[in-house]
Length: 241
Image 1 (cartoon, helix red, strand yellow):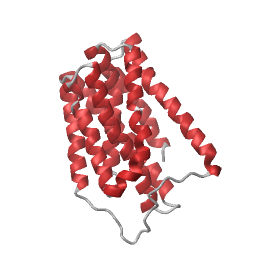
Image 2 (image 1 turned 120 degrees about the vertical axis):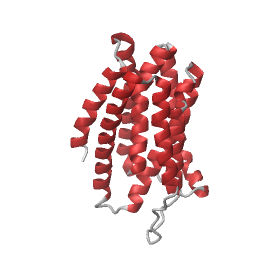
Image 3 (image 1 turned 135 degrees about the vertical axis):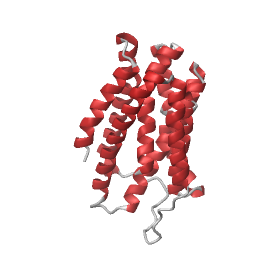
Image 4 (image 1 turned 180 degrees about the horizontal axis):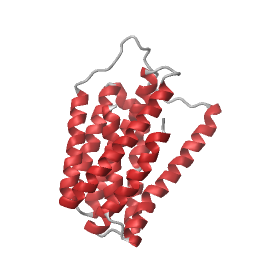
């Protein structure tokens, strides 16, 4: 739960601040933002390699390391206010986020049975929405007194600290049957694969351009964007379970 909150806060902070930082601080164009968003998806594709990483690192420790990497990419983002710097920091953050989300789903299905895991997923999504509301309120007030650099450092530092704490935990239950550490494809799941692909495409288009449009064309401030996300997550908090 702690790691899910950290992962959620990291992504939400990135979503909320990215476009204003890109436009106001660096002056990026829509094309440059599109390139950065495309690069951000590279780690998502490379999560296929998580199977090989788990041969070396235990899965619950990989989850903690992923959150630490996410926090690192977020914390350093304000220190490199350039096109290249923003791209590299986004890539680092994205590696942490995507690898955590992969292990998160895997561990949830391993630790909980078929009847319990759907409820756990729903509850975690609800907690994630509540976390998004919390970080939205924090960003709303921080944006009035701090610049992008310090806001990124504070949020990223908190995430890294929680990740280091989680790295010292060992929730493994030795009585559980270990999962297969290999890729599994089933022809009968083709619809799920297709819907996942389409959902990713929809999300990518929205994340890449919707908020950027509001900032670039309609002069939305960090507070305006934060308010929109808080309203959205308030709804999700009640609907997700």
